[in-house]
Image (cartoon, rainbow, N blue to C red; front, side, top):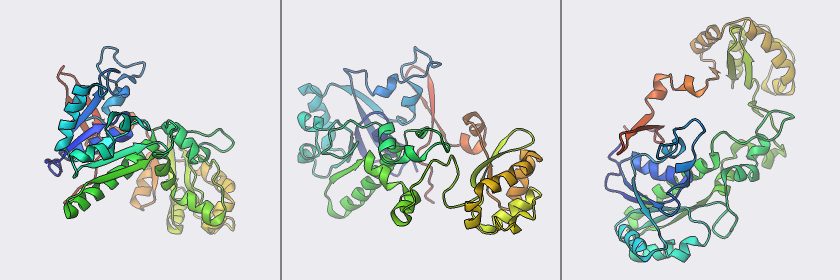
Length: 357
């Protein structure tokens, strides 16, 4: 896997999360990724986004480590002719440039797609914007989450809108850009020509609304805040507490799974209740269903429920914090480490987790 793109050269003119996530994707697959950072501002702004408990003397933040593994870092002032000439020399034999300039900035510096492809026609220029190339508004993930409907739907019933706990719009846009670049590489193999690939955070957010979008577009259903519950399935997303104080979430997607769950928690008669015989009825009587299920979970320990559910292929899961997550061998296997020139070691999770066999 680490040799797939060993001959690929990628120039990263991007900061924060979306663009660097694309760069790290190629770095994990063996590409030579050169990250150009602004030496006037101390580099990528996330270098300085430290938590209060982080070491103040550490050269970079934990946030920065998330998407900057195994890259070469060069600090430049691209307003200076010498640094700009150095960058253009790198671009001449590069395969991909990843950029997330503010609107108009790339053109002023002569680093837009048209300018760079004049010196390298095979170049694939991949750019990320907030709302599209012609919209000058600055874009930040939380604003895009708000504007694309994600925040309105996210949160508890009766509570305020809530943003997702990661910069999801950045990550969705990064996935879209990776896909576009891979298609462009495939096209270049056939034609020999490079191209421009562009995506906006706004479009990526809209494109990922999936069934919530079609519920509105086809059924006129305006999604409301439901906590973790599913608008189309019940019980799915419901959280229940067990006798030993742990919390479990249900993901029962079929009638058979619902019946098996009821057997496990000693409520075999529940599927025959007129209110709960079908998924449609359970959705209509969700509150009553949850009131019937909750006491049964409180009579059992979490491991007892989980063991039986695993045996019968009923999807129920414990709700873990990140310490508990990274106690799992499967999660530890996804950690990438890097030793830095000062001898310090940083860790982050892999962003490439598929296998090619």
